[in-house]
Length: 204
Image 1 (cartoon, helix red, strand yellow):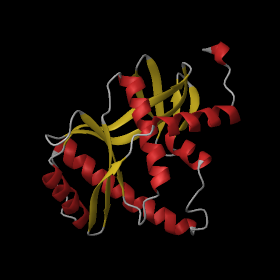
Image 2 (cartoon, rainbow, N blue to C red):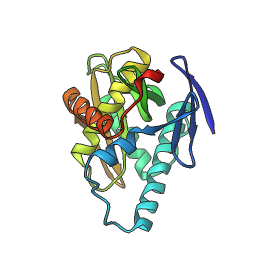
Image 3 (cartoon, rainbow, N blue to C red):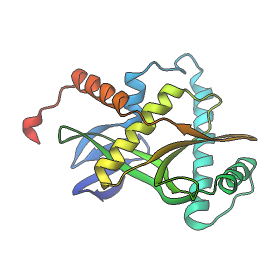
Image 4 (cartoon, rainbow, N blue to C red):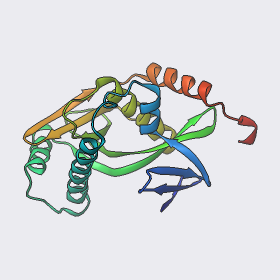
């Protein structure tokens, strides 16, 4: 179990089960909200295939995190793709593996962790970036996930996120994609989620 002090909360993360606890209470993850509230595109895919894909995705995330935090460069075709994107778009990682908390009317209802906060001389302000390795990007899932992270980051750290990006790397394929900011979409989803899972606000 990993433990953090975040915005006056005691936050714990169980990496094995991918579970978050805030002041001892289990809360849903951003990824779980996306899976529950939107159609699941991979529900008919063999679980073994999904498991292998997740392992490769985790390996890519680890390579990039070690490179950004410790300067460790892994000689791998996908790592070369990441470095090429950095060189082309001139972005620098300010934060890595940032945990956020999402509130609804003052109650923390969810938590999540995204890949990096970046800045670039070509972009105004700071951006939130998540790394994906899947064969096909689901635009609706990606939009909801990154916009939820944006909301959580701004609520947790009181700092504005000006743009959202996705780094899509798979084998020799590499892209630095724009993801539209859509606050109305996030509000609609969270309202629907809380309607399905009522919160006792008297306990806040």
